[in-house]
Image 1: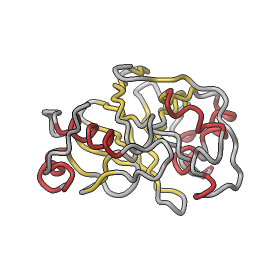
Image 2 (image 1 turned 90 degrees about the vertical axis):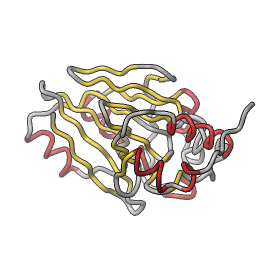
Image 3 (image 1 turned 135 degrees about the horizontal axis):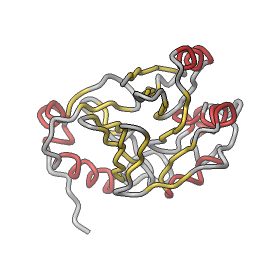
Length: 212
């Protein structure tokens, strides 16, 4: 397996590319990937098959439609964020960047407990609402691709119209309950680990659980 992180756009969004043993590629959150990245994947003989979106914000999806047009890759997003893929304002584009917005019209919705498979890869979907209603984490082996739910020593913002701070606190509590020292690969900033966050993240060291 090969995996690489790319940092792109003015928002320093992390995009993750994985290539399977059979040279099938998965991209997580294709922010603003330049053609150099595509060439690198092509030079490795990789074919982009799947695009996994942790949520529907524009700074995580900007290159998605172009990649789909070039490769025919299948896009996966949670049902609660699917409307963002075709609406620049719902995707926070009005606050981020309206230039070159291209709607994503073909996709498959995911929900809690789904498994996305390709070759030896198995991505488990964990619905973690809060930053947006449709935010998810993809668990792959001992890695959590957390999008904007968790960052090193903090958590995601709640400035989207579908944000819910109480839901985000509940999502944090669910993640805290995981018993493996997962590597956390967030949507922005440096990587971290679950054990580190349990000791150093203010939102992990306090009990924020809200009981419905």
